[in-house]
Image (cartoon, rainbow, N blue to C red; front, side, top):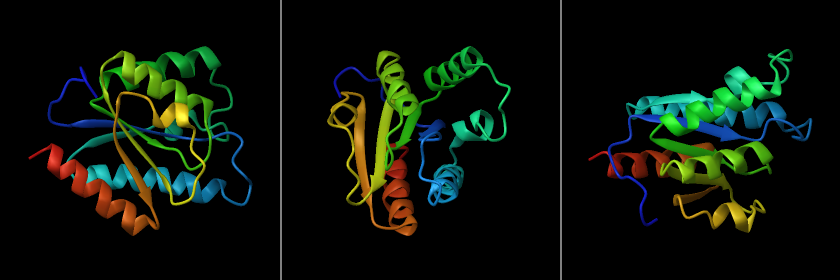
Length: 151
């Protein structure tokens, strides 16, 4: 962890795969990102859920440069980056690196058994890894960690 700034967490950015999700799982994963945002809200944290604005199916006309610029601004101004990494995502990996460069905290979560990149897991900004069995398990682990770090 080293030199990451430690302060109360008031804001979070929720990232996860958007493109390349298996058709049978895309809606479920997007609901998972929204669930993470809801958990943050219940813990008093303002969460920006990246897919709300960047979703290819809703914002097809957004230029890649615009998405990069806006998402980078959100990542570096938020206190915490939460990466849901059950499915690989070049974008979420890049956002994790931007968070590290900006000395932001990163929390990595994924479903039990997911094959998550060692590069992402090895990012020095990753303070917590949550491997979860269900959304209720994710909620319990995430709330516990957030409350411990905002006490």
